[in-house]
Length: 97
Image 1 (cartoon, rainbow, N blue to C red):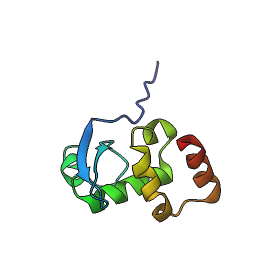
Image 2: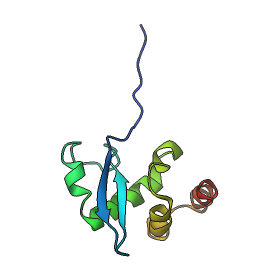
Image 3: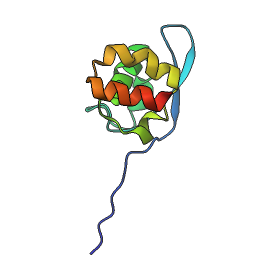
């Protein structure tokens, strides 16, 4: 019997106004935040504070195929607040360069 694995994928993007005033498109990926349902996630991500927390959580635990869906400048903006290990931070900086 074969087992099918489903990997995380984006359901689309949601526009969000960053604290810098720029509008960014945040990818909607269920599972990055623990409690919201996939239906409730797009509405939550319109809030800049939730979008920032969501992005920091992605920086902490998501793989590169997920991270590359985020705008690079937004990832760099959230990088300092994510409190990553040195090796994870270096790897993300390398992939973003």
